Length: 285
Image 1 (cartoon, rainbow, N blue to C red):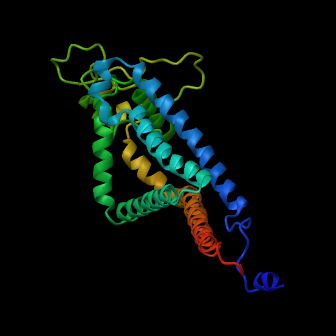
Image 2: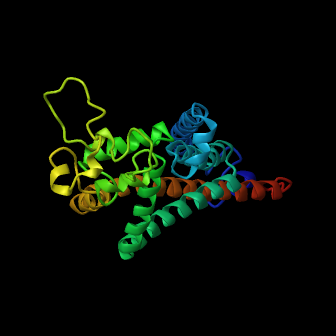
Image 3: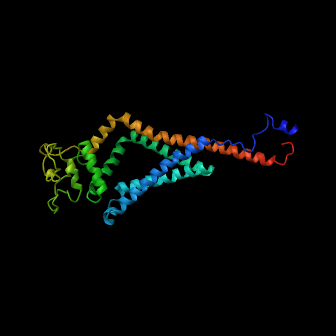
């Protein structure tokens, strides 16, 4: 009777009781598992893209290589989601805290980048111009970069950074008299005005366009640069960009919330186990 009384409403839960919610545990696990698999695909695609390039070209444009960016993001995601997967499955507080801290830091960096980019818009514009000019210089060195630039110029109906004559920064399109390239004074075909009647893309439509004036060239190619087009597009789609930013932030915040909730439950479970061990020898327990 005394033993039953000790196990009344004021007694702690038995050893078969667990504070850790299976719902929280496995929800966090599968949440991380999905992004872990995505990260492995990103790394695999990025590594494959790098290996398929010539070594000289790959080293020359390393700073603007989309494959490198894909690998870096994939490796970061792999590490963070690995901590989340194993930490939730093994109920490891250290890994869960690492996962939570990494997500928090990434979220704060994204927030800081957005705020600083808005406040220092002129400096951000200058940095974008630097990246675009660097990409123009290495246009022929990297097929992935070339396809990315062509896609951007077609989508934004633009050519070059500030104007179509920025393509003189590229050694193949340089418009100086001593340039022996057959593409001298040309621009990429993605700068050309669309011709819906042609069935085959004319990749030579931009030949000699840099030697023409703005008005004359505007009849054949886009003369406005992509930087101004990009800035105008951002101003016109602030709500869309805000929605994308929110869509990226929500999974991060959910991950932090679930991990901290699971850590709290694990700590409660550890305290319960310690309590049970200390009172196991008590004959009245």
